[in-house]
Image 1 (cartoon, rainbow, N blue to C red):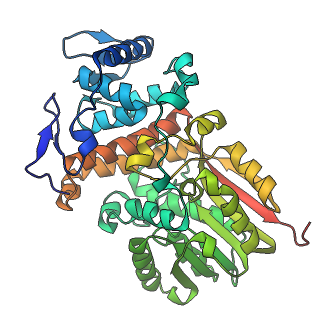
Image 2 (image 1 turned 180 degrees about the vertical axis):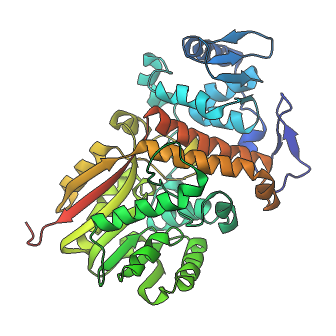
Image 3 (image 1 turned 120 degrees about the horizontal axis):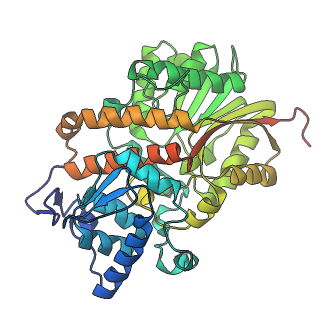
Length: 423
């Protein structure tokens, strides 16, 4: 993704953007003076009462003090936010039109007040101004393959630059805070082992894993003597997971299949799925949980790890085209605790036997990933990822970390059980 001759710079001169690669970032959308002025007034009203210090190019500032947010190009920022809401907010950061010395701190302030930033009258008109999710991102079998590939097939080498040696791309479980990079791999194993214990995985257990990642859970399950069938739609992940299973000496007990979860067959004693439900989409949550039910033998146990968000915010976001769905996880939607409970209750014979939340651990996991990613920016660039991509991923990791630090996001480990005698 190297920048080409057609790159253009944001007005503030901060970032040269390849217009061919990033057309919606290269130039702000055209917006009328009236719309831009209205947006500026709404933004200023929202910012003036926040514990932020918002600095403008003319030397003026807003806010009640706190983390600094530098608004380098207010006109472009207001044009983007007025036309595209939070999508424009993220694209404005990618373009360098605003920045923050402590990005996570600034975003945490905003995340903690997510439901209050837009005035109530505009919230009620959300269906008019918010962009709708494109049909192309629906998680049909074909759509899921495209959506998964766009993120997980970027480059195994890219993920290896900021993940620990386990290549686990989900929340770790630490003994205490602050977390240290040298303890991350052990914390990932602690998370995996807890899920395996919840599912009672042991010698001879037949395990179905939905969402392979790079294979660490399957490898650890096989090391206990289990036989694992692991499903993924990512060719990059599948290839490396097989290599890692072979290197660990458990290839004969791990089968990694390029297969949609809806195509799974057979019966298993345990089903495990780590941060997969977020990629399914609300439309297909009933299908996903029915697959867990159908593949699980009577008396079996399913252990899931899932990111969750407040129910009312999930309902507002479920049909909206967000910055995350545009640039990071197309087709994705984070469920609420209520949505998981309702779907399990209404569409399966499973019972939610246990649920444990540990969002603070995800904030620390993301901090370690973000610091590693930004600290190895030169190596990311050497892989062919340009500055706009690096700002995109820095924003994604910081935005996610802020969500957990503010309590807007949480992460849960679930135990779902199936009665030995069907109801």
